[in-house]
Image (tube, rainbow over all chains, first blue to last red; front, side):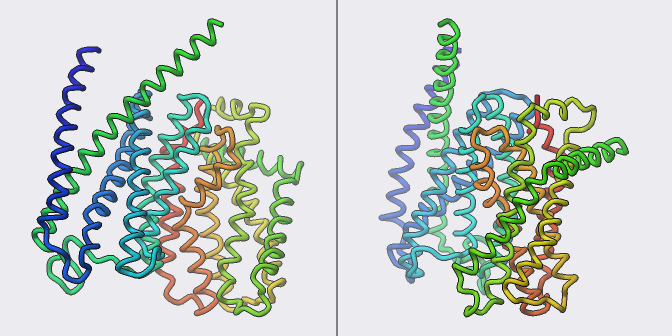
Length: 237
Length: 225
């Protein structure tokens, strides 16, 4: 167990160094290397944070979904703690998406908020996973809380594409299509350099996610241990 | 399968019997529906505004809020005398409990709608003569989806300390697609005789099917002794 922990620590140290270097490099790419957008100007640079946050949030919720299924099969409480750590970080990044999106929207659409499909879906996504914690924290026994929040994590994730489709039909689109076939263009609306910067940004955000996930998971494991020790003491008294 | 079907009917009958004895859920739901109508008339100045714009939104708010009252107690009441344990001991698939409750809730809400929607039309001086069948079908499909996910979440949140608070907070975001679809469909029926409804009806049917089938696979994990 202790040896395993040391191994983990070494890997984490490497990941943290990698993260720091990657962050500095991506900041260099975003602010010094990549050309400014002709039409949107310097504000467009928030895009590299905005899209990467959205990607990370989605990855986090996908992990909650997968871990939910795994938990229901093998009933390992650690899996559930990992899922809840992932949901927590997912909410953090969804909040970042909403904030950066709002700032960007103000400068390019001249409004702080608009009921556009992706914005609205993100807001609903935020509500769905806030509710994940409301349910979780309102159930006393940890086993029950784990089971119920796993089921909710699965349902919530299945609901997201339906929410997105419905809102897309409900409102027309303002967002450009970034990858693949764009409107009237053969290949999206993205410059080569911008694409490279974006991909690096996605990679660094993913490493950031993994480091945060590990930290949060460790903290949750320790909290669970402290709780069980507390209960032991209470029994002995 | 036959056994499963019988269990569903039995549970539904039990719910109906209980409700016939107590009469509290349905009567509260009806009174609440009428109250929402009164609140709408105060807050929207319905006499002067173009009614067609507000109509479908108001109608669905009334349906959803009154349904919420019935959904909230659906599973919570099984905990009072730990009757849930009895249900769980029955030698049938757990999802039969879900479908039984779903059927009963659907009957309750449909009953309430049969009273509240005509009242809504009378109070707001609104008539639907054409496309009444289409209107009814849309209301039914919307209600079915809302009650399926609602019954599911009612079971899910019944373990929570504050289930009355948690149920709406989980139900509203998850049922967004259904709300959008239902409001749009009702709006289309009133304003254009139901033209251009096919994407919305597809959406609602997909939602209904997804949340009628998922419980079959996953419901047993919610109710564990």
